[in-house]
Image 1 (spheres, rainbow, N blue to C red):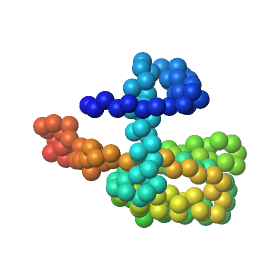
Image 2 (image 1 turned 45 degrees about the horizontal axis):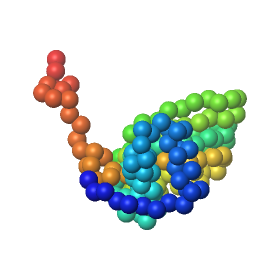
Image 3 (image 1 turned 30 degrees about the vertical axis):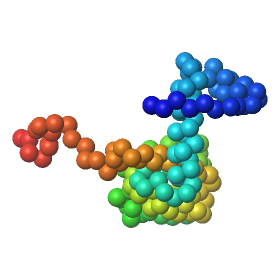
Image 4 (image 1 turned 120 degrees about the horizontal axis):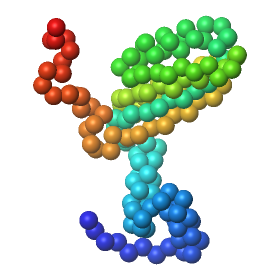
Length: 154
């Protein structure tokens, strides 16, 4: 770790202290590290240099809109390599909400989300991207140890 000296004006310091109290940080270094990571992550996503990501696409839509449910389902099937899982919730008689967990190249995930949000009768949509951050976790195979392959069990 490296020690860095930073000068902050009184208003910015007051804002930092307020966030620390609100979120329960033990010291300013922890708060500044987390806020710096968040800012760097946002900069990578905005610049399109994030590589791979995991993401949550949340959107609401009119479930009675003609063929919309079928079109949304087909879009997910057409991008099955990106779509990990979805949660479907009936909010009221006319409105449904879906939360789709996505995983893959950031540009492809963003393009997929934009396509879903642009569908007619999708009322609102939001994409939350979490870049891989160099851990490789997005691409890493997931194993549970010896004997975890259920196709070999009887």
